[in-house]
Length: 121
Image 1 (cartoon, helix red, strand yellow):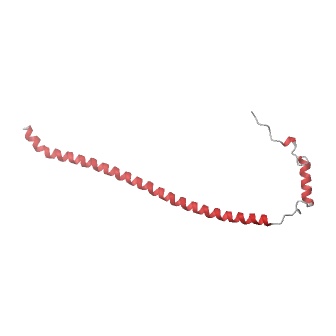
Image 2 (cartoon, helix red, strand yellow):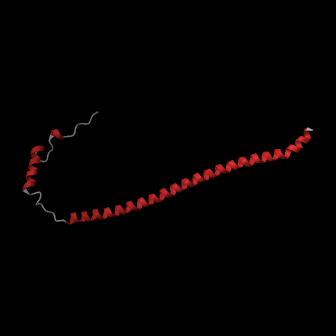
Image 3 (cartoon, one colour):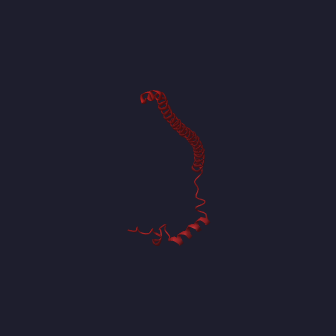
């Protein structure tokens, strides 16, 4: 009787095993789909970062070129200006120079008390 019962249950047991295998594979498919979605999200973020970085670099290059043009223009005007001694020879500048010499010692030499401190060991 047990052999007959086994033959009657065998198809249902086979179906149950097949259902368990399909259920396990379905879970693996869900896991794979989740991993794929995560990878696609990471790729999208990296592409957005690369686009934003390219825009920032382009803006920075534009700003740098504009700044460089301004600096070159000002530098050329400074070099093109005539060299004069009127300001340095003016009475106000001479008084300021004399006052600085009186405060910090004359002759362009620094006061010994104004030297940097010696290195600490």
